[in-house]
Amino acid sequence: MQRYTQNHQGAAYGWNVTPEQVGPSRIQNQSPIQGLYFAGHWVSPGGGVYGVSVSGVQAAQKVLDISKQSDLWLYLANE
Image 1 (cartoon, helix red, strand yellow):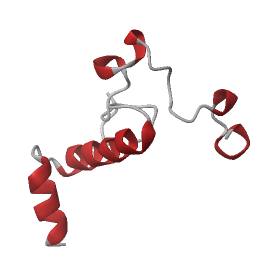
Image 2 (tube, rainbow, N blue to C red):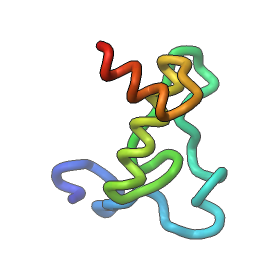
Image 3 (cartoon, one colour):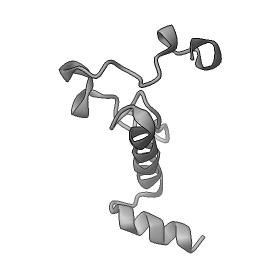
Image 4 (spheres, rainbow, N blue to C red):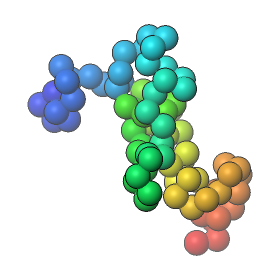
């Protein structure tokens, strides 16, 4: 993993899953810099396929200013 992703020691799931690095302690999807958003296993909600997928959805919602996930799917269906 380190060879292909350059993640520290090949970390496949982002930060350690410890109380200090989960939930609200993870990096949030929207940065303090206007227009800069994050998605992936290093940010909220966390690692694994599910966490990364949800992270991308949350980032898309913030970019598009859509608060409800169901509204995001409707928006995307009409694009």
